[in-house]
Image (cartoon, rainbow, N blue to C red; front, top):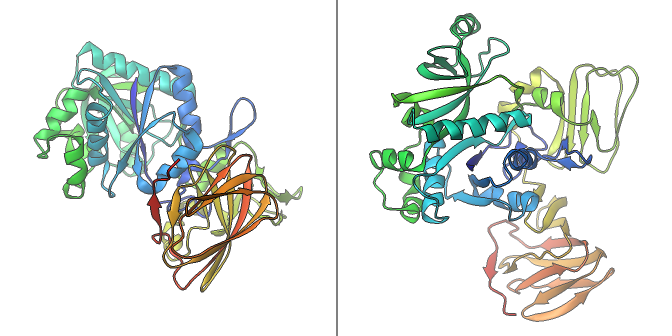
Length: 438
């Protein structure tokens, strides 16, 4: 299978664990068969490759998520980076052109677009494979997956099929309804629209040329900000007359809020926390190095990170977005391709950060114009390169890096460094990257 995973998100619905660089799909709250914590994106990739070991996965995402993807999946997937935020039509088109022009995917190959964030069993991706088979049969230009509803929901759009067979032509689409209307849809064998689309690559590229003038992937990348800011559904799906839907009746959960995430996370407590015997239906996720004690809590979620602390009734947690938008803090934790970056303290003119680099990894060779840095090695071994000069790093070593000085660190073992940044302007954009001569 050729699968495009759509990985977006503003990072507000699972605050304070999610932020602009760590959306919900990167939070490790699930467990694999060996009992190791894994994130949503790791779980989805694992499930896809369990169903189809030869599957080729490309993630369509923003620049801010690339480091986290590399951190969690390494080089297992291809990444198509959007130069700016657009809606799903532009994101899917760019990824499809990337498959064809950069990865050499044939226009006759089937491409399946899936969201990165449903909580499902492997049967879901077995159904995704059925979509590929249906497209190859050539009975419709576009094939969708429809989720068999478990209740009349106001949260999802609906697909009305011609009949209740496993594969049916589509009669019409309906927007998110009220409960009364949703009940009427269910009487018509309606399905939730899962945002899963399958088509031959040639179909999308041909259709797109009727909407956008472009020559290839690189041309699309340059003009990306001018592309229509509309969903794939509006641009193509709802206008297509040759369309069918494959019914999926297995388990499916949209874990877009803490209320839903609490239902599927592996443990009721993650991190330093204690609940007394009077707590009921409560989950605690603590990323801080201080303990949390909960007593008498019922139907609650408590989440703590360097970005903030949430204490909420589960049902109310779904309404937190406008309040989170009023909270203005810098990103206090980020996953990098080489490890993690955790802010310990931030004040005017100074920031203290814990830099953790995995064994065998290295940060980029870079410099800063407006700040100095002082490194203290607290665990592990590695090597620093400073303006072309190499220096072995061991526990207790302290190195001062002047503004404008090129520098990088390579880890021989897992390596932890306390980095103190000092300067009038400490901003993420103050960074120049260089190629290092070996």
